[in-house]
Length: 377
Image (cartoon, rainbow, N blue to C red; front, side, top):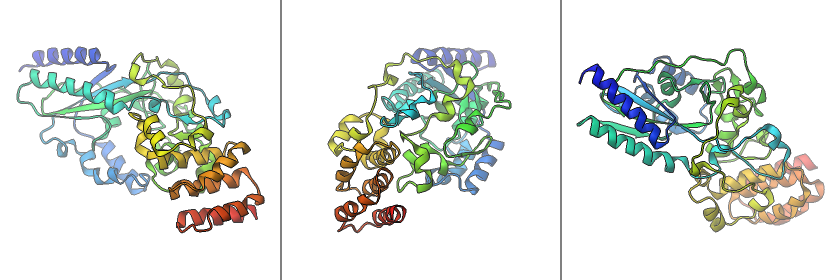
């Protein structure tokens, strides 16, 4: 196949991608270069926290040929999920749970994966005998550096991908193939001297331009971290119970964001009350978050986060339901409920906590009781 035919087929693929709902398309070369070196430095610094899967896949992330042998091109796609305007005023509504915009409805994997498979099917018909592999934020590849090579945007100082005229409210996905295509023109960096994202970060997780310490990031703390949230970050979490949008909210480039009409990404309901959430059962959790990204942190992860948010709410009406939550079967929830009660009450609460947990054996819970005792005594 000559280059003219190749370009024609590539144009047809782009049109097909747009018909499926992808709003960005480009082709990256399979060599990572400096991005691979930066990944190694980032891992050496320990900024991955407990995300062991990144370290396990380090060599594959640096070299896509280890993911698909003989890979020649990586087709990159962008999917807009921006469905609602959001500003920093949400932090003032301390009784209401804040959830990252992308997680307000259907799990994006369930929406994008079928479309990507259709894309792959068409691709394989056009290029008989080719080999392909698809990923939707699920494989050992460096999505953002590849997307930048594909011209879809540049990696901003907050480490999210940014696009002129579109902002950063979108998902990335890819098809790796052994078919050689002309590569797209890489996107240039347009962050300039702006550091709004760095200044707004509640936990100073963006420790330098383009460098994120995941261990400090609220998205990591509320989603990726499976255990106890470090005390030093709990107050900064505020009312955020799943992810954090702050660095995107304040980014000037997101003033150009256009809302998507995609039904799968529309918000299900107006708000989640923290006091209501801390009382949900396992059955209610399963029903409420069926098909949602939130299901991945399970009930214990969600209610851990909700307990912290209630501790930050200043709402003493939450005290009775938190006392009741000390009976929860999950030690992770009990531990953070102890902290929340310490934040909302005074020394008078210590006898109640000790009585409710008189038979407690779990170390993480006992540690929280000790910490609250020291603070309130």
